[in-house]
Image (cartoon, rainbow over the protein chains, first blue to last red):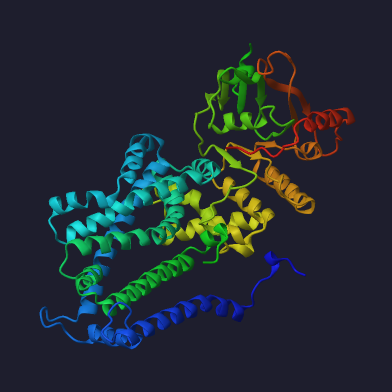
Length: 275
Length: 273
């Protein structure tokens, strides 16, 4: 009898095993939804899949009377714009500061305590401050993402820079590199793939901050829509929207992973990961 | 002292001492090394060989005495006059073989970007290809270090270190992690490069036979004074300074002695950090 730790599923088997929990969850939902709908046809909490599909189709094709835009696409565009802008700004700041504090001990001594303290401030707690400072426009939402995500990126990149073998820094100096060249030719290229990896991890919290900010003050956006229809218990809107957000998050994550593997094969060979 | 003796040696130390806090690591180190010598350093682990190499590199400062390269005090940071090959992590994982070797020229000629373009880039490439051909890597120009075997990575590291034409080349157990067969090839390579380019080499090794086969001069680092009450009170020094050559065989007594001291330190894989 083979040990359990040595039994590996075949390729097809892996797919099947992976799909099984989804199928089970779907069946449980279907059963519950059907039971409740049988008891009362106007039940809104667990809408039938057909209702959800119909609502989703409507949201994705029919322009809203009030704003003249198609809700799903308008919301998606607005949210992705905020998310993209927030994450891009965070990545830029994170890479710059992480590179500098990781490479220059003088700056690290100055900035590290500040970054550590800032990273401990719960971003949601200062959301009111942001609304007061920036108004309830786009700026506050982007700022929340930046404030929430940047300290993590800085700390992660700094620690990765510190983990690079000293031999490499010494080697670069024996090849005649000055400080700037060490940052530019040794640290920066090795931090860039790490930035992609930590951005992937940070996307989860970026979504969280985005939806929270949109829920509180916005005129459009995925988070805004969900919290708007909550008042009418419109689960037939909320559940498809959640699925849609999940799909977007998944696609973003896969896209970043793909870019990283294409652009930095040496990094993935070193980390020994296949994802 | 006569005028000829005042002529500065390539590397000269006088009463050099290195201590960390109250721990004395190296003491009473005095030597002259001339251009073209191949010095091999042996000794038990923890007897200061690696510290000595760090002093030469400039990542550590001497505590007392003097250490001069071409008559001038050694700068206390690494520089292009001293090339180095470590046991590992010597090459840049994010650069191809070619990129690793052209880097030296790119850094020297492009202070701002550290990169060359156009004709300058082609010239740097040609120089690099020549160097890589010397070490037998002409067939792997576009490969990345992770695609190379250990021996090939060390060949790359050597080619890279030689691009700056360093005054001295420091080798920190460069072949320690390689298979015996590959090691033989590397011995041939380093001997050939040393002869052809009149290099001055310092090589740390754990292998006494290797030290005898490669070097022209063998240094044994060891502690001569011991105080059982205060093990840190005395440091190591060069206890043997022997002229060696490929024809000479290590004296049995020395080999035995080194093996014996080595046995007290089973973790013999120290590296520079």
